[in-house]
Each structure stands twice: as structure tokens, then as C-alpha cells.
Length: 413
Image (cartoon, rainbow, N blue to C red; front, side, top):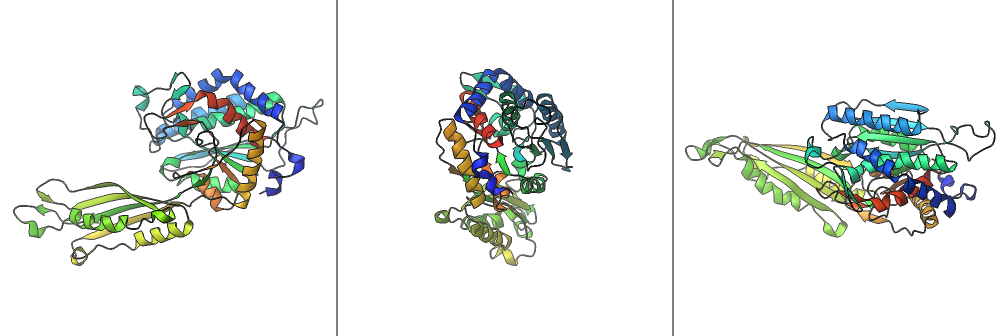
């Protein structure tokens, strides 16, 4: 990690004129940028459909090669049931030179990595009722904001730098296919790439054009009670109700929240039983916990793992409690490395006539993993819009060029 690079005077940020030239390039080519976005949005990539994920990744790979040429390095990791991570690395380029030797590609310095997930929360068939469309400044469609624009944004940021003859570092585009369901396959690849990078950029949706410097960490818990079914009228004594036991346990789960410390607990689903007149043989709930501090994540995760059925259900040997607890993502808070990167981003923004005001958000991203390692990471550099995971998901076309220029400024050498 070259932390000094982020603040050295000999690697000053681009001039305002250069940054505005990049922004103009994107504006002039906006039709092509949006058509590239349509191309990958119209390849549905739900997180749990491996066949569609593979097809979508192939289309993204083809788009990247068409726009940027063959990468100097390419590595695809088998994701098993999850979407495969794919790394594409292009050499850096020096400023425009008059002789071929001076214009040789730059390969000897650490790359800047852009981490983009290509999976979405939208199920197969969504496009049949909701294709990508434009109305005024709003561009809508499944996954346009979260986060397929970030993929196109990265590609066009490199194109803009090349067009302007501006030197840039080697660029690694890291595509992952399971961010929306925990980054099981993506996490080790992301962490390895971040350790090998000058800085990692995560073009997840911005907060109204602002980056995100704090994200909550997460704990997932799947809690199941197994019981014994019986007829509720004829022989209720022969049954052991999983629903009754879990219903008593839920308030204990919810009580783990500590809002004064930023810790929230949500029992998102609660289901069980097979009929009104049947003693329930099974019940389950899915729990989502958000935390701002690592100590809170550990406290809640430990408490969830230590849950037992309350009395009198604990004494009933016919009832069994099953717990699956995953402290999925650590909280993301500013670190010295990321603060240095944010200071450089603020300089880039100033060159575009913008002032940064980083935001905290409750959602998590793959940036959480990188931050926890103490490595430089900038998050929320993507589209300006609203509605991720919702039917009003959209981005503002007016934000496409400014956000792409901001990202390009962090790629510049």
C-alpha cells in the first residue's frame, strides 16, 4: 500500500481544466455511455441464478474488451454456487509522448482497483415488466443504480483519460457476483486485490453525489425451532409447538438492540406451521443486525450464538433450536489510509467546482471488508439517484458525467 502516493506533491491531482475536459468527453459521448449501460442492464443477473450470472458476466467482459482492449492480466475465480469474481487489469499510460519509448505502458506500479458487483436483487423476468427507460433526467431499470452504472462508469473513466492523453495508473476492474447475498465468493478476492492496490474505489451509488465514509456492519441470523406436529383439537398434548417457542424467543432477540450505540435489530421474516389446526412442527425467523462499532458486532453475534429456548420450552426435549449466525461485514469507519484517500478525492472534487461532505449510511458494501484491513478505500463514488432495491430505482443522467470525472480523477497518475 503506497499511502504516501495519495498526498505527495509530485503526484498532484489533475488541473481543473483537465478534469473538466474529462467531464466534457463523457457529456459528448453520453448516448454511448447510456447504451453501454442498457446493454448490461438488459442481461439479468439475480444473485442466486448462476446461469444468468455467467451470461451477464460474459456480456460485461465483452463490453470491457471492446472499449478498453485486451487486458494485460485476467483472472476468473470459480465461485461455486455464487457468481464468479473476475479481475481485468489494464496497464497504466503515461501522458501523451512524441516517441514510442516514452509512451510505453506503465506496469511497474500498484494499480488502482475498482470493485463492482454485477449481481442484483432483481429476479429473472423483471425486465419483461420493467426494461431500462428514460424520462427526462431519470433513467430507471433493475440494477441501474445498484450498481451496474459503476461498471460502465469505470470503463468510461479510463476511456476519458486516454482520450485526453492524461497519464493514469494501471487499472484493475474487479467484478463480483454475490455482493447482495454476503460476498461469500467475492470477499477473499476483494481483500487480496485491495492489498495489492494503491487505493480501492467502490462506485456504489453515491449519497446525493457525496461519497460514503461510514457504513454500518452487519450480523445475519437464521433462527429455526424444530418441534412436533399434532392435531390441535384431538391430541394437542402430543405436539410441541415450534411457533409458540419462537414467539417467546423473538422479544429476547429484539432486546439485543442498542440504538444509543447505533445498534439496530430487525426480525425481518417470521414463519412457521402448516395450518390453523396443526401444532406447528417448525418455525423460523430471519434477523438483520446493523452496528457502527466492531465491539457491538461481537457482542450481538455472541449473544445470538448463545441463545437458548426460554422455559418451559427449554425443558421439552421434543423442541430443538437451530442457530446460524454470520457476522457478515465489519463496520466501516474512517482510517488513516482512507482519510488520506478522501483528502485526495476532495482535491479532485474541488477541481470540478464541488465540495465534498462524506456521509454515513446504514447499508453495507464490499468497502467494509477493505476498511477493516486498514487499507485505503473510497466508497459511494457511483451514480446519483435513489431507490436501490426498490421499484423506483433510478439514476439522474445529469450526474453521469460529473461522477465519472470524479472517479477518473482518482485513476490519474
